[in-house]
Length: 404
Image 1 (cartoon, rainbow, N blue to C red):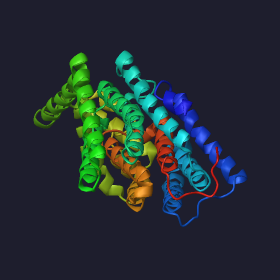
Image 2: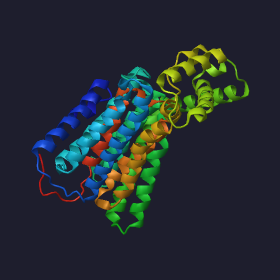
Image 3: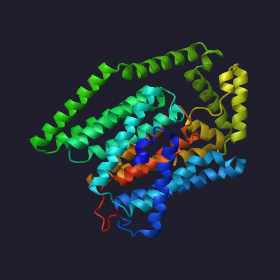
Image 4: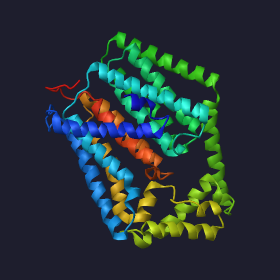
């Protein structure tokens, strides 16, 4: 939990948290007795996740061997695979106590505060590349939201979670990473949906009063923060305005200058990638040819920015360009599996995991539209870790054996 809380401050701590989860899963599989039936929804979902990561790994291995591409770029596939196996082992053997569960919420809330501290003091100079770093922070926010919305409301939990979620939003806003801005839509959407669902149930007036007071407190905190630090909303608004202007200029006035901007270079490379993908749809071009294509595109456009890039800033186009439909299947299968897991776990006892997993899947899908986040070690570690935390944080069926 300490490593989770401090993970935004140094990428090695996030990786260490993932490694701890993996080693603990291996130890649990070796030494601890099984407590949860394999037919339990939580165990079933964990098995789906492990199988999806295994299949994705070997599906990607086919074009990897075909083209002779280096395996050091497959670090995310290894992290997802090992983390998924550990998660399956732990879910079947461990249920958190109430104290441990609240400690996990505190750790995630502290993670949000640490993220806000990093971007408030350093701006975009984050410990890892700011784009995958910000996407990783959205994963933590989604897991915390899932754990929060599905427990009986009480002030310690509401205060801790609200503080953490607001900090996550502030940290992402000041990171100026547009690929993670979907969290500003997703979090309020899920909160409103949960409130509507609670109001439709026949809850006592005491519960409704708690919901109203909690909502008022959070809204008041948002207003106070916005007035105290206007750059919390000015930064993302300014970034979106810049993106809109760059997109318009790149489309209406294509030139080496407009195609060298942040959005312009993406639009240019996406267009060129789409043209090349159709020629080798099944197996792709391989890594070496992809690098050569980017160099040639930069020479044709006269853009030094394009020539200096190593990927096409879109997860889906990148895997299609490298490894064709095999690569695309390996990348989308784990994300689609997360959505299937969320649907499978929608019942009240496992809803914390469902909400967290769906949020992680949605944020990963959106973040992949504008960047190849899997090119970075930190992103893969945090994605695997947050899926594991979402699964372990769900109460599930009552286990016969409880560790800790």
